[in-house]
Image (cartoon, rainbow, N blue to C red; front, side, top):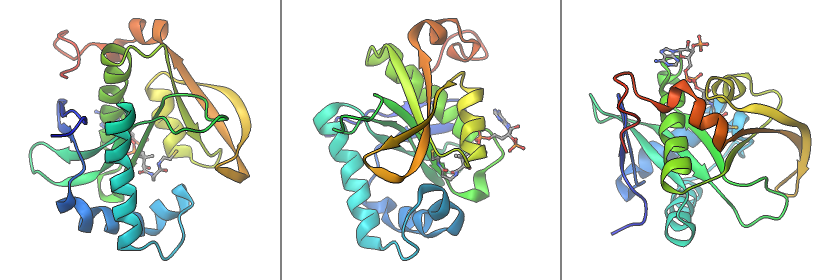
Length: 194
Ligand SMILES: CC(C)(COP(=O)(O)OP(=O)(O)OC[C@H]1O[C@@H](n2cnc3c(N)ncnc32)[C@H](O)[C@@H]1OP(=O)(O)O)[C@@H](O)C(=O)NCCC(=O)NCCS
């Protein structure tokens, strides 16, 4: 049993990270574009990938938030991770929505779709009043996802204790904006599938 739920969206399954994802997750973190965007060490190891997976699963158990494995429904392929993050860190803005997908699957709206599912869970199941995204100002693709999801830049440069060398932009969406968002309803008007 795990506190991490499974969500089904139009094309994706957001499910708990499993031990069997370790090869694919290690491969994801070793991809240069991913490493550069997330500011990972060039020689990120399988052991570090395993620890990261364990931390995501642990966050679900301890705090009821965390990242999901993103799986393509039609193929069962592991596309990456996406979801929520709320670390125990005083200068973190709050509940964050985030994403990291294998570059082979960029450009198809999968991060946006996972983001909608994550925000639906945050606002409608967890009862969040606001959701943030913490993004480096050079990460154009991630900022574009945030914009598509209706987040706006509320603080241009915050130096966080977890990333002291580089200020991050803080993006935010409030519950009222989510309630009004066209993304909140599925194409058939039934709402996101949880
Ligand atoms: C950030 C990241 C997840 C964005 O991925 P992405 O594929 O660009 O984002 P989306 O899944 O929302 O796809 C949007 C693109 O798909 C297109 N698209 C196709 N179908 C779509 C649909 N149904 N819905 C939305 N967009 C769609 C959009 O037009 C857009 O195209 P463009 O790239 O030509 O502008 C990816 O670049 C990544 O993993 N980066 C490395 C990790 C990282 O930086 N994480 C964030 C740290 S803050």
